[in-house]
Amino acid sequence: MSKDKFYITTPIYYINASPHIGHSYTNIASDCLARYYRLKGYKVHFLTGTDEHGQKVQQSAINKGLQPRDFADKAVLVFKELWQKLNISYDDFVRTTDERHIKIVQRALEILYRRGRLYEDLYEGWYCTPCETFWQETQLDSQNCPDCKRPLEKITEKNYFFKLSEYQNWLIEYIKNHANFIRPLNRRQEVLSFLELNKLVDLCISRPKERLSWGIPLPFSKEHVTYVWFDALINYLSAVGTFDANDSYQSEWWPADVHLIGKDILRQHAIYWPIILHALDIELPQTIFAHGWWLVGESKMSKSRGNVISPLEMADNYGIDVYRYFLLRDVPFGHDGNFSEAAIVKRLNSDLANDLGNLVYRTLTMIEKYFDGRIPNVDLATNEPQAKKIIERIELLPKEIVLYLTANSDFDFSLVLEKVWELINLANKYIEDTKPWNLVKERKEEQLKAFINLLVKAIREVSNELLPFMPSTATSILEQFGKENIIKGKPLFPRIIEK
Image (cartoon, rainbow, N blue to C red; front, side, top):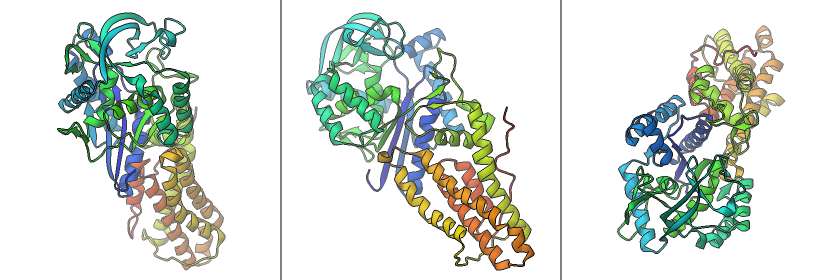
């Protein structure tokens, strides 16, 4: 990435169903990275949005007696309200119904058409309406969709195709020569294996208007609208730039530093998208990172299974920052995780109430009791092993975190939080072993001042590093530990009785 900018994107979310914790996982992780790079002085652009065209949206609107645009306007509010609730600090929200987006999609199609990258042909094959995906006979072992397992529909119609197959060897070489282009490593291997074992077929990028009217019209065919996946992927360009008179894409933000996505849409992002960009003579994104799923038991969350969990409900029940902490701490980013409320309660009681909350509250209490609320400004050199270890951790922690929050370390949020908790645990043990009440009895005032001063330094460092992860909590802690005086509040995390 360049040294002065950081452009991060989430997928644009399909509006046909209510957002679940998988949506919130992607946006919370993206928000954490955006906040981190802002704190490091980067100029950050954090993009999210909604995918509003396609057959499923059109059908859902009909079922509710609405026009597709009215249906979309209502659905978008649900996503925006959720991101506000979860404290998501996005810089831009793109909708595929935005005029700025429609213009760029049509311009991209015009360029590809003029360059001979698109052609009209008869399509005969199988189509999955829920996934909005065409499948060739050779890709199937039944008449069900390989992705969602629902029944496919046999379709014969005239459409426009993008010459995806011509770029297969180029893409294989590009991925091999750019180690961080697809992360984590197992996803990179998955894409390479697919490309090396299968022959790409050209991508159908249109739908006949007689079958689907809700979409962006092709600029060179009045009878067709744009395939929803071609339409959707262009959002990463349409939100931040435009084409000039020479068909050259211009943007202060592009290329994206990170496209953060779920692993279920890896093929579209790691195969379709780089080839589309290459055909348009546009530089590729630095990193496409595909994280894992949150499972309930052994199953992926889905509306059809009835196991979708509401992120709003979790945030209301346990607190926004508790929910954010759990998602980023409980599972290494990139892996699948198993979601349960019992696991959230365990993290809340152990990590947040016992460790962080206890450290903050008893340090505030000691300052209030021993120094009338004034933070002692005594910084004694010490050879005491525990104090030295805490000082070393305070100095080392930010340097470690820089390494962990990059694509080649797979954005290891869980490891970052583990390292932060090492400092928290050292500070708590320092209190238990030092027994400051004994320093009071023995009238060792200077030692007591130095002891409290070091605890405050540790807490401030912890809070600074937690700002991207738990912004409200970290801000509250820093406010309580003012420059000279404390402002003691209530305990941060009341324990919950585990069932």
